[in-house]
Length: 89
Image 1: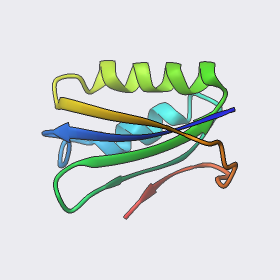
Image 2 (image 1 turned 60 degrees about the vertical axis):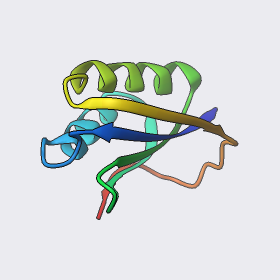
Image 3 (image 1 turned 135 degrees about the vertical axis):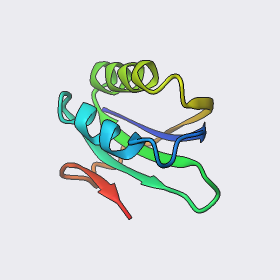
C-alpha cells in the first residue's frame, strides 16, 4: 500500500477538478481526499495499492491535462487513515 500527496497548479479551480477527481476515484480502490487551496492550487491525498493509485493519477492527469500546468507529487508513508475518497471544503 502506498500514499501520495499531490498539488496541482494551473487553471484547476472552477473547472470541475474536484468533481472529476472524486468521480475517477470511485473507479479505483483508493481512499483519500481532494480540496481547493486558497492559493489557487488543488490538493489530493490518495492511498491504495501502487497499481490503483498510479492508474487513478494517470487517468486524472489525462482527463484534466488542459487545466494542469504543474504537478508536485510527494511519496508519503501509508497511514490507512481514510475509509473512502472525499471532496473536502
